[in-house]
Amino acid sequence: MPEQEYTPTTEEVRDRWGRDVISEDLRPEWLAEFDRWLRQDREAQARFWMRVTREHCWLWTGETAGNGYGRVKIGGQNLAAHRLAYEWLVGPIPDGLEIDHLCSVRNCVNPTHLEAVTHKENTMRGNTITAAAAAKTHCLRGHELAGSNLVPSALRRGRRDCLICSRNRAAARRAKRRGEDR
Image: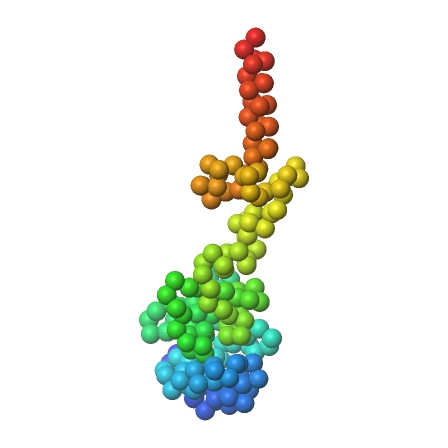
């Protein structure tokens, strides 16, 4: 006979993740949400929290996707662990927002490390090419990337190109063409 997966009782979850343990990390307004999720699907929540190691970051030790984010199957749905933890402990994620890991640890489910933000803000906070490009104040040749030194057509495409460098490249192309025409 195959061994059945162990499912802790609500009392075991409350003992391990109870108000006295969690309250040191959670904001007071989240305590009501903590009580609310305890009254929800206790079996699924018990399985969920038994797969979390509680340190500074609450690390998800269950299944992870290829990108490092925790995944959990509840009610036949494959869900992101950090989003589920946020919804259980903080509340619903507002439409148009996504969850940002303030700690930059993808398998962290600590609600004090999670914040609902716009996609743009999440991208700009991350370690991405887009964020690095937006943070640049000068081009590679030291010209300021601001105001009248930006190529207008590039701005319309969502880019910031140096106008001085663009003009210099165009002049070099024209000079090269003139030299080849002779």
